[in-house]
Length: 278
Image (cartoon, rainbow, N blue to C red; front, top):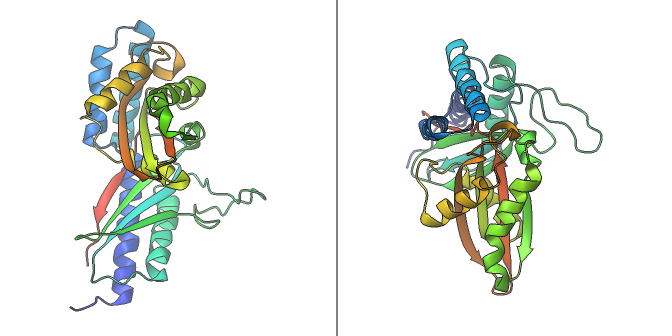
């Protein structure tokens, strides 16, 4: 097995990260566009219909002008799949960071990353533990960018339920959305992580946002129905659609625990995947 030259890998991964971030910031995936469009057609509240019209105009304008669809271009959450012939070295992390720096300058992205205590801004969306990079093995060498804005991220929650509280999962999801209100710019997309560990459930909830949102299981549909009964509606002004989709990911957990996490995303469920050419 021939291992590619390290400098070639660095450039290819840096370029792919830049391309994925640019695409994610400017255009929504087709499945996300589909659920937004379907909700806009089905909405019965006149005020909410107006908000959906604004959302669709915003999406269209961003694509036509090639500019980010939201002023909050988020913090860089990155998922890498790495095939066996690519060594997992610090240079891979450096390449991703270089792609983020380039995207910040050229897309452009708002420099959002600061030190949590000093609040010092790195001005390029790297440093202080960013970008947040998650790596797993795979057949293809890919990079996925999931920009995470603060309005939705701040409303996310986790609970360490008891196994006997399994029937309280739905209540926790609905309660989380109720407490969030208008702050995450609804209609939202909801990622739910069930099982694993304290940190594992949160990771599952965020990864769930990458799943196709135009299909849902019966359980996910039940959660969506319960959330939409809240009537918070588009931008918190009332309406039929407080959420557009609920996606659930699960993992095994300890017999004595039941971690549940809810990761909220606004209607702009931005993410893009690019294969690294080498």
